[in-house]
Length: 398
Image (cartoon, rainbow, N blue to C red):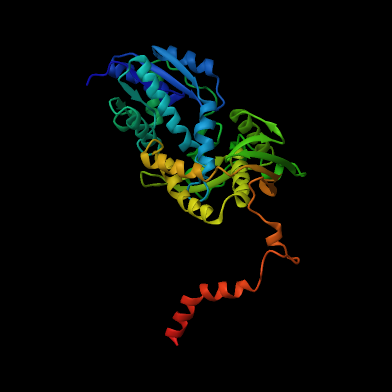
């Protein structure tokens, strides 16, 4: 099928600027440059101007921040999603919403192809393309990094100079980074050696724990059905709330992570992440669940978290099994209502109080003082019945 128009996921950086010009030359068709605002720090007018100057027929910048927090971040945090015990899925959660909007724009603009700048080594190519195929399998997908010959920075720079594509004159950032409202990630450069400690001037969202205030910050977070709705009694919209959590976490040195993770394509990759607001949110949410969720509901829900997180990490946000798991996670959240008090101090986020109208905690039953609701003698039979199989094993050994 011939390509009549292409929608390119465009950031305005070196790679996607070169791809924009290369697509126009290679396919001789109009190119729509599409940028998604998911909360990254960016001069959007400069992105628009550069896209038009590089040859785009049109530059579309979509403000997806509200939808990103409401429909992607909050659902994942209702499920306490975490990959390989550490990663809060900042990049992984942004890819499906970017792909969804790209497919929508393709339909709106009458394009029959989409393109992205992800390399053939990473996870993003999978996430973008699984999104495209789940939402509109008729679209052609063009992934230049998998078949063009511009396979080095030197070649990209030479192509850019040949076509008068502006290249930043400032010192090149040695890291590859991805930023959105949930996090910022860093890969490459000195980080490719997992023994090297990240340099302090690399971090953008947080101060180091050593430089955080010597006095703790106390905050209270209100939740309704697993979603955060207020900080210190002030109700905030999703974007405003998450922005404030990022500020509070960043000021107190919270949310830094250095890990080696397993990519879906098979290799290990070292990444450094800053997720200040997300780190606070997850700690508060899990703490509230300790008094609002039944023990067995909590156990079963927690057993599903690794599979749920893996689906997000691997790009299966729009898969039917993901829809099923999300419904299960959300069913568990109906009683997760209440308030958590936290102490933020030098990189630590410590829950110090929690209350809820749906609390299952009974002081009358849990007290160490005299009570009239629990017969301690019942524990003897409970223990003997639970030890019966152990007793039989012991007898057989003897």
